[in-house]
Image 1 (cartoon, rainbow, N blue to C red):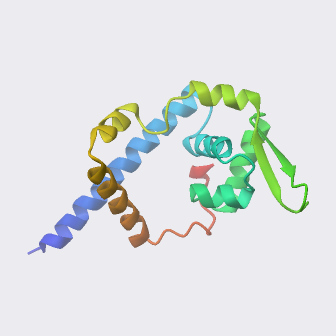
Image 2 (cartoon, one colour):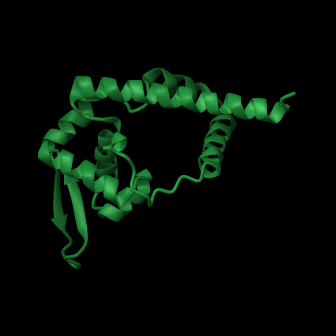
Length: 156
């Protein structure tokens, strides 16, 4: 007989797979409609949000390795959406800024999360939103995700 906790764990993993699948489908729609992957859009939005941040700060803010962020930036630079520049005080530090064409794309592209999710999530009480966030953060820590390790090209 399977214990109840194993059954709940399997249901939890199934729900995570469903979330991952929904995010993949949404990312493919973004790519088809706007020529950007979900991670590329995440990077663009974070660059816009954290103006003047170094590559290492961007990497930490979006929980992707520096190597992955660099590969994504290469692709965004090829599309003329970002520009890299060296710091004025420390020439070893690299910063990045978005271009005007990237701003136009950011304004056109729908949210990273499906609008339906955002509408439903915002209708939840604050304690429910916090509970969901803390549960997902706990799951991520239990999976021991190490962002310092290079990730596969799925994030590029």
